[in-house]
Image 1 (cartoon, chains in turn orange, cyan, red, blue):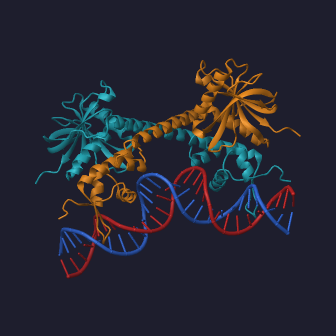
Image 2 (cartoon, rainbow over the protein chains, first blue to last red):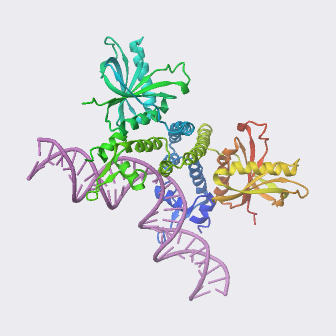
Image 3 (cartoon, rainbow over the protein chains, first blue to last red):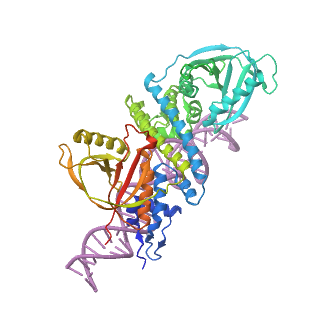
Length: 257
Length: 257
DNA sequence: GTTGGACCCTCCCACTGTGGGAGCCTCCAT
DNA sequence: ATGGAGGCTCCCACAGTGGGAGGGTCCAAC
């Protein structure tokens, strides 16, 4: 009897999976052998389990995580769509990383000119939102749009404010100088004083490259940076190619005593 | 004395790294605190170590592996180039995976029509090479080119032969029917008999999608596939858009007894 | 029937980089 | 002196796979 049963090694060769993998999938409940000998623990597979095994193998070959494969096997049709979305986001992040690395390789490691400037206090209208680390770009853009819609014709440049401690949730703010309160925004005053400042030229998502250099400059000199990182968007992103976007990065230094 | 020294927590905040990370980098020798109290084990950093810490933080933020960062810190200027190359290859692989997933999502899981055909034995000229799993595409193309150069005007279609067991090193072969020996190639005979066959339409790198379906069909029926997977390149890749490339995938079934 | 070799079992460790937590010690300001 | 913040080491977890130890099982050849 049981003639069609395959022990794990034969089944593994048939499906082009390793024995280790099959045991692991069994343990996870992804693909349970049709029969397990209660005495010896030997796993026996039916040949028609090959299709499921091959599906696992196929999805693994394109990096679908095992838990998602499990959901697919249980008929969750939305699982692959979720994987797709995650992969797309991951791919975009990796492309940005790759571009950043290319920039580092072509320009060398940044030692941009850091200057110390004295800033006046500025009365501003502010729009805030909470973002996660990987959604800063989107959320900031949204804040800029909201602020522009509220203020209409800004007197000064857009200023982004980003907390220095990289908590999983961080509050980003976008401010613009204003002489009176603007509905739909919060009034605030950006403190004046001494700031370390550096100019970033390039896409917004590469700001960290220059910001790190600024923070390194500050830390190296034993200053303790105070308050959020300030980004002053000098270029108009609608009319400037990404490679030429100019942004001033500023960080407040503690007052000399 | 030692006034500039920072304990690990303060230094971590300054560099926007976690204490855990700093201890880990110390352990790996990436960033050793300037002074470690021999009694208490307390780590103390100098402010000017912030630059190195920030460099680590910057490179980590673009997914440079820690060992590569270590090489960068020791002045190995080629390290980043190596990382770049690996990242590029990884990115390309992920893009292919993503495209394959998109295809699965748009077309549903493959259940292509598998047919059983009787093939005659064919006398062929063969060119072989050894490839790793991720270089199959390149190596196969190279074999095709070498074979074309040797044969000149082939009588039949190009045929790729790929072993079924996915060892880390696998020998790929490209064959074409011929009536006499061709210098620069090995003569061989492709065995005739019963083959399970399926037609793949789409880019070559998505062949695994269809091949898995073929192997699933074979395994499901309890057949034991014999010999290599045969790919018959029906379309001319130079003149056909990738989405329309037609390839026959065939696998020899054991002789019925 | 026995023997040997291929095959199978479970359990542990490794990789990467980070976080969480336990249990304990140290620093510093009140 | 005391309490709380902050430091220390050591262990575990994550995802998925491979390697290996130590031991049991299957089957064909003798």
